[in-house]
Image (cartoon, rainbow, N blue to C red; front, side, top):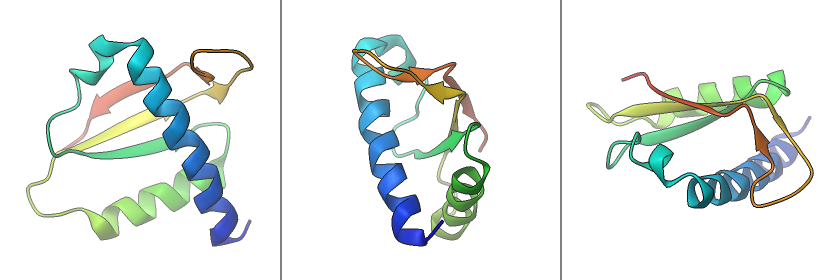
Length: 90
């Protein structure tokens, strides 16, 4: 997959994650202010590696890092994210 396609997939994931947080406000509280949020889709290994690689390059020193592990996307609303887990890693 080209970088442009991976970026497009990330835009979709970012939109869905925003919708997920609106539906699960308790999860938003688990993300520290100023944290780098890294979306890790278990269903797309190439996109997961792309996001991990880019997050390591862009992380600022001392910045909290949160991994959002996503098992899949489902049809329906309000969010299509399935099996989402938020974990602080730094």
